[in-house]
Amino acid sequence: MPFKYARNLVGRKRSANSNYHLGFTLAFVAGTINAGGFLAVQQYTSHMTGIVSAMADHWVFGAYDLVLGGLGALLSFLAGAAGSAVLVNYARRRHLYSEFALPLLLEALLLLCFGFLGASLAQIDGLFIPVTVMLLCFIMGLQNAVITKLSKAEIRTTHITGIITDIGIELGKLAYINASHSPAQPKVIANRARLKLLSGLALSFFTGGVIGALGFKHLGYIATVPLALALVTLALIPAHDDVVFVWHRWQRQTRRNKTKASASP
Image: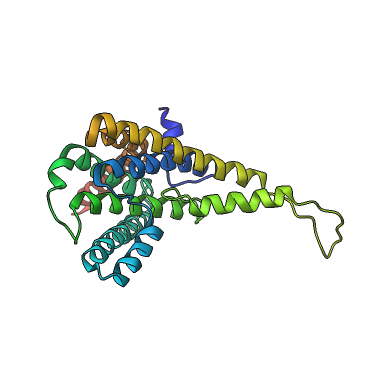
């Protein structure tokens, strides 16, 4: 991957194009983890609407152990989103290039843990649920928060209910017949660029789901390793820029200290 493209995709300076390309990439990753992960943990880990609804049902029918399981998944997703915000704001306040790369590096590390240790982690109970479920929910919250922050809430990648709703809205505008209009009643016009973006996100999520299901079916947990390596590839360039920046700053500070020391009587 060309360095300039990777830097634009995940770097601190954002553009609509880089947001869209990263959105498609992360929607693919989310679809892969969500659909493929279901084969591993028997639970969709990005669908908080379904999880909260299931918790309500289980509560009514007295299945309190399942309510606690849903709570564990919900809190894990929440912790992932909070962790992403902490990393982004930490880097932002220090003017680091890896402002959005840090959460992706953490996601890659957790995916590697899931890929290599998933079978062992599945035997360990976490917060009312297996650690594997907690891990995937945390990853989904982490990823959804970082793309939400960098796109100013224009793009989300881990669930498509909102995406499909927005596609329906734009299609409704597209199909609307403007029989007459006036300055007081402007034309109803679809945002074709947004419709293209939303359709691309939905298609990327679906494609990732197919690839993820096939990967987990034939390879098991290890199928997440290529995803982790892809995320590392995306995030390494901004992280490298930070290392170079810190190194140069340290050199400048060292030279200043030597100059002061030599000037002292």
